[in-house]
Image (cartoon, rainbow, N blue to C red; front, side):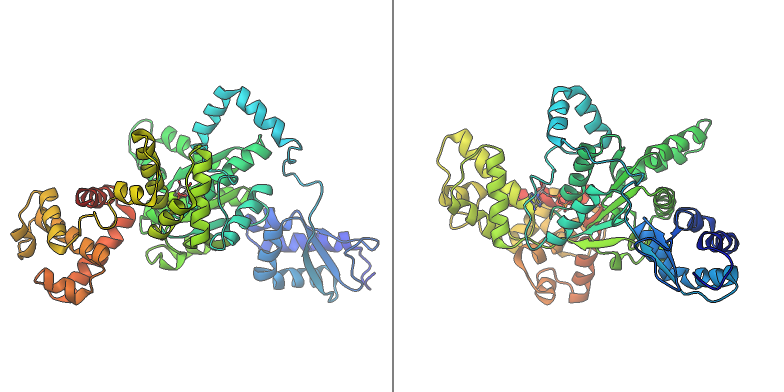
Length: 463
Ligand code: ADP
Ligand code: MG
């Protein structure tokens, strides 16, 4: 016991009254209110201290970082003496969190029987049935992200909140994010899971903001959609960068969900540090929980991904062909899968055996493939934009010509690995001009879907 005539509960009760006036309600209610002081006969009791227990791990680290002094002072004031405080996380068995279903297998069977329900659930959540943990091949490149995703799915809202998954395009972010959704739906069927791409979020927001008679209702519906959930999976968050209204709504949605202990997962093609146009207060929200990065899978993992894919589609692929594909497509899993899909479909339809040679032929790689040159790239860009080759190499600045020129500069750099000075020479420009054109294109491609399609189309034309 302390020298104080009050017991720990009374001291804490008085301290809470003091804190209530000093700490914002948005912190007080979720993080201070659930705290209980350890009693003398309890496990975490520490003589001469006041040990404050909470079963909210984030709350504990948040309070320790931000409000420790306020809490210590309030305890001293309430006890009328100085008593050291410890704020600790103690997991509770009787958390409000829903219990994990003990027999998930049965649940799956049930879901399969109720296929209509499943479809409904799937479409509400907008999850792709393929993107599960079982179908995800874990490699060194994704181990940390995978483990974090698993832990989030086992204790939504309690471990890492938010979880921020970053990594380059086609690397498995969406897959992992949706795997969290599937797993939560399986283990906690009462929880509401919402998956959305930020582009969709933005479009719906714009639609809801439009003035008119139903504007209030529309906004309410929009907010219900994103706030009346237990788990929000918001994908491609880089799309929001610099879009003021969208970022503000994400910020408010985040706070509303977070304070209710709901799980939030973000995914982005770029790390948070590159979000130059995002307000700091939102960036700090993104970083509040845990940020994990998925890297490019190594060769062994890429081979495993193909083999897993083949197994699922019941296609026999030789080790040699799998290794050939893994060697050729080494930066982007989506492209790797695309190449596999193309060769396996072609071989099945044609009824031919899939060998490294036939795969090369189908993909247009190797000796028989057409050699790409700057001239071919310029020719194809000119054709796509309906301008002439001469236009591209000129200084003309009409919209089509500029677009064609930028696409050509980008492709020469990307496909031929040409240096900026060499690219400059090809296009009769100085190297800062091509550097600018290339960087602009690269940046635009991250968010501009039609532009991505354009570039893909031109690439296809050249194969
Ligand atoms: P991102 O969201 O990072 O752009 P996706 O999650 O859409 O990429 O992944 C692209 C494709 O590659 C998907 O079909 C996905 O299933 C597959 N994929 C990516 N990583 C893996 C992996 N580790 N194991 C199995 N499939 C993967
Ligand atoms: Mg994605």
